[in-house]
Amino acid sequence: LEMLINLRRALDQDEFKLYYQPKLSLQDGRLIGAEALIRWESPQQGMVPPDRFIPFAEEAGLIVPIGEWVLRTACRQNQAWQQAGLPPIPVAVNLSPRQLNQSLPDFVAGVLAQSGLAASWLELEITENVVMKDAEKSVATLHALKRLGLQISVDDFGTGYSSLSYLRRFPVDALKIDKSFVRDIVRDADSAAIVKAIISLAHILNLRVIAEGVEDEEQHAFLKENACDEVQGYYFGKPMEVAVFTAWMSEQA
Ligand code: G
Ligand code: G
Ligand code: NA
Ligand code: MN
Image (cartoon, rainbow, N blue to C red; front, side, top):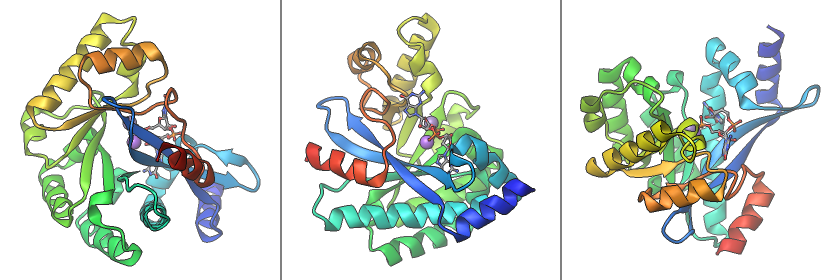
């Protein structure tokens, strides 16, 4: 309960921050996007990582207003970067299950209109299980979101249970290979095989594929050799606060 009171206050008093982690093209190392990741700077507890408060927020329904704050903040920030003359990139936002409801497309349309950001510079990351929970309804909501012109990617791919037939019906643009497979690609033959299979699957379905959690050169080389499209991970850049990410972006430009 104390956690909930604190989260409510955090929202009212603007204690949340978004960090941004770069996504790069494997072909040429260019910056091709960023993922927004929430952080809570609590006056009492210091920096609280999302794993410690998102589950509470989800259970209490607070994830809806927090998620709305995340969407608004990420869109405004991305528009600010573009207006500062930085090369435009799509910014990805993570969605919790409770957020993927029928009212989400209208909410997102409103946020885009208010921020002035073109829809093509917004990406939504949704885990497979979120979509599969109520697949029929989710497919309809995803189509409504896609009609706005944004990008959708399936997060933590490989850990959930999407069936291939659904995957073909989901209007998604990219698969994100879960970092648990990437972590073991060099020393575990099964993980290597799974990663190769996901890359092939994505390409057969005309989807982009991104590997997350890339931490070293060996993993990078494996992914490049196996024609993965994009990478994200500590090896290339950690999640950074706005000022640091802005400087990092300017160096790339
Ligand atoms: O940034 P970090 O690796 O600590 O994130 C931990 C978890 O929190 C990840 O599963 C990530 O997807 C999730 N997460 C980070 N930011 C958000 C957010 O804005 N909304 C939701 N729903 N989950 C988030
Ligand atoms: O669930 P999701 O895929 O959104 O989780 C993203 C989480 O992964 C974030 O908390 C982010 O901080 C973390 N992350 C990003 N890059 C790396 C990495 O290279 N290694 C590890 N272990 N975690 C990473
Ligand atoms: Na994510
Ligand atoms: Mn992920």
